[in-house]
Length: 86
Image (tube, rainbow, N blue to C red; front, side):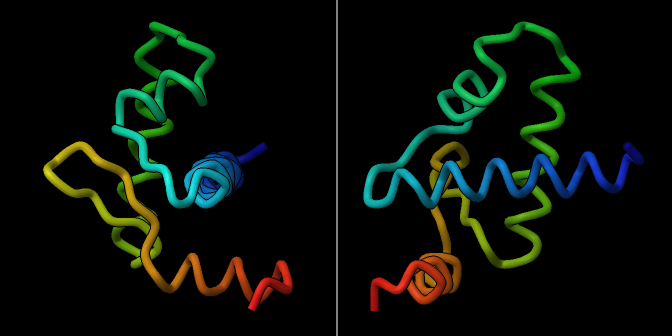
């Protein structure tokens, strides 16, 4: 798997998890701990943080108070459309 493929996989995993939690929210630490199975490895944490940064840059996630990871309305609406919930 290429680095780009790994990054896309990680972004998909993060976005899926954040959307699955709506309306609940998680801190970056909670999300990272859950998605890495409480790993203490720097590489595991870096993957998740990088995925969140890319999703924020793409307008699909927001970071609030520097630590709360929230889905953008665009992502929530798209999920509802694709899940047939609207």
